[in-house]
Length: 298
Image (cartoon, rainbow, N blue to C red):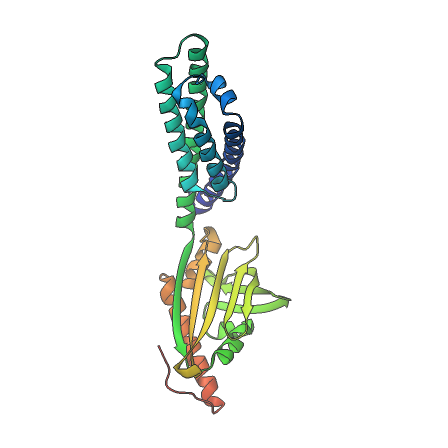
């Protein structure tokens, strides 16, 4: 299976897992409320009336509500869906124990409840495996790393140079251009193999002058990416540690080749090299302006 197909399959699995987990979360909420509010009715329905296990029903209800609270707010609640499987196994164990002395209609109701819980267990197990698989696929598809360098300039000056995105191609050698389009958005163009190029639009997600710039690509980008650059004063504020954190989702095809060209075989080394060039550009700018602040940091 090629890279785009693998990625599409992973996205589809994640969406199915999200929908299924939400339905299971809603089911837990409804069941938990019923077990807490009407434990005797639940006991009669499941054939546990008159059995010591009846006293466990409120605790089961509290457990189900906890599952709902863990499942509903999260997109991929891996740990919580596995706790549902564990809870199902406990319920099956309770029903199995109760079946030993159930007779007549109580036994029939307990058998029916056991069959229902077994079906729910199978569904929960499928959801847990699907969620785990989607989570692992997501972790494999996303690349993350960080690199840093110290430049001979105050944080405000280093920030000012970087914040003008049109300066970025001067030290990021695989960028052709970055053009501010409107407000906090910009258009990026990177070199691709065989003289081609790949482009995407991005938006600023965080902007603290002299401290932080954060960005992410807009939906539909050929190279989905996000990152941040932080500026931390060092040496009494005369120099600045510049730390870049970057994440992207490598696609296949031409865009995938462009990513390889943009970041090189060793992405972290490539970004570190870009930062070294940024260090040199800032040093030259400071020297040219007669404001050199000290030796270059590493």
